[in-house]
Length: 443
Image (cartoon, rainbow, N blue to C red):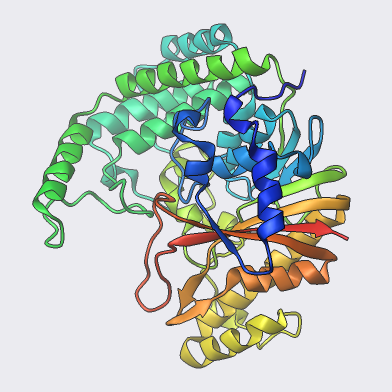
């Protein structure tokens, strides 16, 4: 049964949205979603924190927008074609919506499913006990993939993770198993020798010259803990904390219907939609698959390497010389100048940018096709630099939306305090300091 979130902080959200519409004259309005939603919304809100994820969407944004009556109500179908770890999907459930999502990253699909499938504490505790009782004296061996796992874990941690992974594989496929796989992935993150402040796996280095004294001390503590960590204890603590989070969600929603999560944003959504709300990937600013590579390999998805997932990812960076193409006539007119400039500076960078925009057109077209007349699309995007020039993603996507029959109703700008693991690339990218929340309506 669908339930509305009773949080009293949301009573005035519709009035806030109405004021924005009244004040909007074509120029973006500066807002602060943290202040608008309020500190009492809670950072550890239901199951949002079951697992870290790169460039994670601030949940305050969908929380507010999904509780504005102007954007729909109970029972409406909402869709996130780039669902990541499920932030929009969870807030959609809490707002009483029917939710659908897609993501090309297999880890993202596991996390979204684990975060949004309501399960009782009893069922989860029983599944956890079965895993711990089934741990063998020796594991089946390290999973195949491009990474040498012996470089990323101490020998003791590696052996225990192998035994734990073997027991998890013996569990029958079920929502409980997906939940425990998410906990196992979080254990991998907690026990690896990878620096948690860097997006892609880089070993912790407490002696880097650019670090402050406090930062060096912090990294020494991380390294000491991870070299001697007990993977079984870490897994137990993560499972316990996540069962407590899931219990709150189960108490709030009951046995909600499973969320439909697919793998390719360029495929049409499964049914007619009332609202599309998504934060698309950044144009070559975040290495999504590589950020998840340790977990992807441990979960058994990397036997054929990571490129299979990178090829399906919009915003990817790896292309061979033979794949580079000339300027495409389907590019938004507003983006042609920057792509021409990039071709003079860096042909690969130009191809990455062009491919991103063309594939975003395909994904938006597939979603908008299923959007009902007068339905809304919310895009949360950030502009970045490409070879020293502004890559105005929000403007290029706005032009694409116009070609698809959408009219921009509202533009907001919110400063990014932290989207976790955002990275700066020398000359070709930049730290993204603000994001646009553009709201369109299908005419």
